[in-house]
Length: 162
Image 1 (cartoon, rainbow, N blue to C red):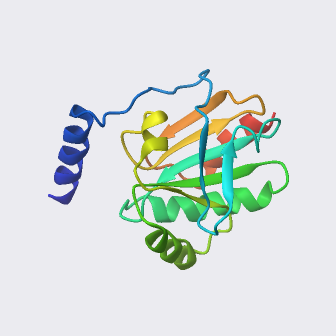
Image 2 (cartoon, one colour):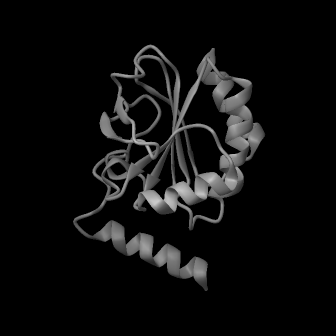
């Protein structure tokens, strides 16, 4: 029943004026954004990441698949540290909620604020989790909508790093 209500809520939210502005897919130029990190720093994409491979992951603490997948991403992130950056953009929650969740699961890659889901909308995110793999030139080279295991995530990262 909870799954049905979640799907219904996502469907209804997509029908209003807050519907995603774009449908970003493989080959698309990744939308630019500016926001804050949970630790207080500023993030500017692509300015801070041009020339570097990047994973942009949209999530929320209520997403039943996000916790396990974020831990799996941490493993791949650690194995590729220095070659790859991961940004975990929280869609629609406040700083305190994000901080508590990140501390609970113990991931070390940056968590970013998107309290009004404006960044998520600019990427066309309609469900969580959604992950984009962006090359050094700012082009989306991979996209996962929904849950993925560590092996799938690692495969996308290796393709991105080639």
